[in-house]
Length: 113
Length: 110
Image 1 (cartoon, each protein chain N blue to C red):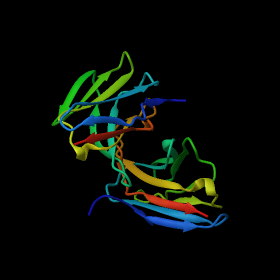
Image 2 (image 1 turned 135 degrees about the horizontal axis):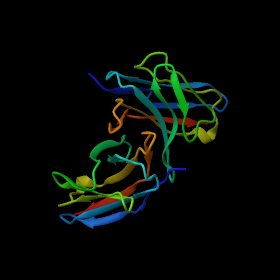
Image 3 (image 1 turned 30 degrees about the vertical axis):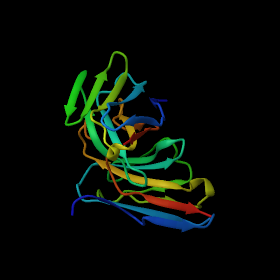
Image 4 (image 1 turned 120 degrees about the vertical axis):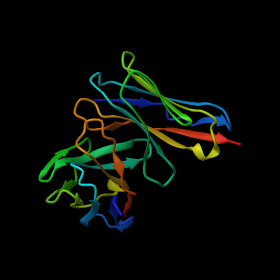
């Protein structure tokens, strides 16, 4: 089925570990985004990508790394997880049109112990 | 820093009433505006988009846009308990990268 899928849905990791969250979309959307959602902060943009091999920082990029070698995939890596990165992470995509809305994946709930 | 402001609520309305949700934004060049609904533990889903000043109706939902005053609102008529959720306002701004408000929690009680 067409759509945007995130994996894993839930992840528990320890402080200092590297963890990668996966995001895959089947629409061939140009733009892909990573947001984190925390109580009291709403959705905050971590990184986004306008096309394969083009990525840019959002509001809260520190501690995260992204890559986009293929249009359909946009993995987010926490190089050395910290407790402050405990959050719900949403991947989203949209087409190139300026009025295009975002389509969200189901989210990954990450707990860093 | 582009800002999108929403009253966090909760906004509590009785079943059958009109719920009014408001959003103000700072980026004057914004051309498109979106409302998302997010149920607890779920991802946001698009319910309305609006691009021109005035009203846009879709079923029980009406979006209202006033670019001069930089606000966009969402009205939900005949509110149902199933409308209980958090409503997020998103404003892409000049860069077309969406900035989200913190959301308004709506509770519709029977």
